[in-house]
Length: 175
Ligand SMILES: [Zn+2]
Image 1 (cartoon, rainbow, N blue to C red):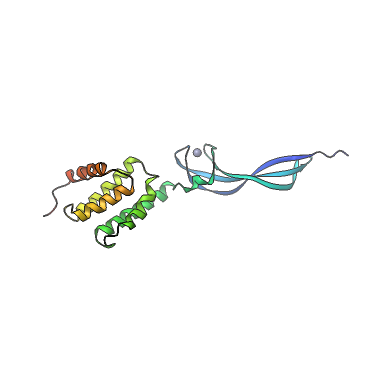
Image 2 (cartoon, helix red, strand yellow; image 1 turned 135 degrees about the horizontal axis):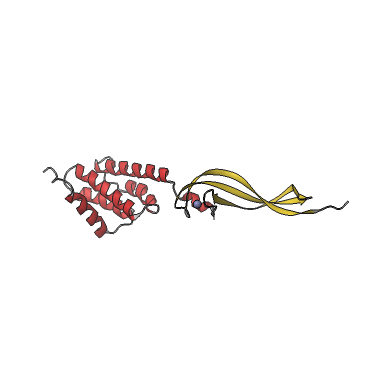
């Protein structure tokens, strides 16, 4: 009897979830696929051999990526982090974090990479609005807004522009 044997690679899904696909530029379902070599007998895989590799596959565009893509936050995660960052900014403006701006930087800076310029301007606008809700733009309040802008990688001139725009759109602060 003639034995027909050989090798083939089979893919198995080891994990599924939602990620931000760098190719689709949107949240998509993904599968982590594990490629394993098998020893085959009469074309049937009978003995599992070593794992040849793993990759993340977008279930929409079928793009394949390394695990690093999972580090990019999905939209809901990003939105939640941004809400939290704005809470921290508000608390700092109310003096709940003393003058310690490292708390703001710690929350805001990690978001910068995933945010568009418009998103960053929106966050600085929101911080400015929170500052102005408390009264005039004092040096302390301006420092908080500056910290937010710097954590997002914006220049001083850019931050000034955003603050001016917000100030101009509001009634004069109470004396
Ligand atoms: Zn995709």
